[in-house]
Image 1 (tube, rainbow, N blue to C red):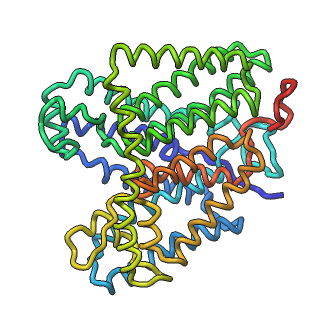
Image 2: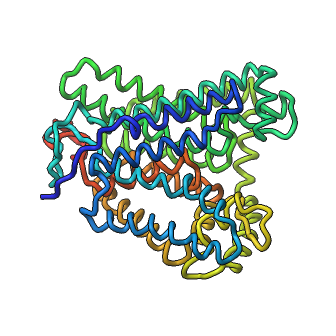
Length: 443
């Protein structure tokens, strides 16, 4: 029987809330360096996992993840050989490779008592969902803090925030109309859009928790369902107001996916509420069209411009692929990122995380990445009812990484690798003998 130690630690569980608070501190002083703060927290997470012996070689994929990290570290040799400074490698390593340690946090996340799946968990478990529920709730709350702060600053438009946005290069002109083109909050529109869509998925975790509580006669059912709906709604508003094309498309796909699961696959909620939801959405759409038609047009124009944006960027992608230092080894970690701007012969990929990854890691590194992710997804697809949150997180990240460098953000990569680790673990979030409603698919 595969033995997995439980993942219970302060730094990994509170990572997102602490980093978002760090970003909020930049409103007070620009001497606060949230990137440096996040790096220190990631180092603390790594140390925590090592001390708890959660970074292991117990499975084949675990070994591949370690090899993947070591491969990226070794890539500094051919990065330097191509004339790049080591600072390019160091900067990229802490934002895109160091977060890979969250794979092991997800791999050993603590499930509740009796939630076996051929896996024996070492140590007592806690509550419905254990540390998994706690981690997802803290991630969602962190995103909501950034989202609500962004909404308030967007609506009130105080002068100090306009000046702040200009200094942070969020906007090109320090005035209200420019500031309101996209909602940046304190993390920037690209990252905010991703976090909003990812938070829609983690917020949906509590839908199933509420339904489970209802079947078991718990009084907390309505509270969990309402909480989940609030989480999803505020996260969706956050993603939409970021006005990122990839986020807008992903929001639509996530809504379709969640409705399919809730009403037609897992039967978590009666179908009559699906009709009620459609009516509410239609009423909201009509009201927005009547009183704020410019918002609808703004979103529509962003959506229809998506094919053109991909076409424009494809030339950049082709040029980068055609100028790789080595097709098999790649250019080295960071060679195609923003940190290489201004360096002679550098082919920087401004938007396109997956192509950037391929150019930097080559066929060998990119194949390792694809295998780790594909293997995790394969395991999750065998039990969508159990792993729909993690599958959604993987899909959201990969989709938005087509046109944005999402996979190379310090706030985006950890939740992606955490989801991959949990999928690979095979651990359930709920006991296998939990009661199932008639017509529901057994998780």
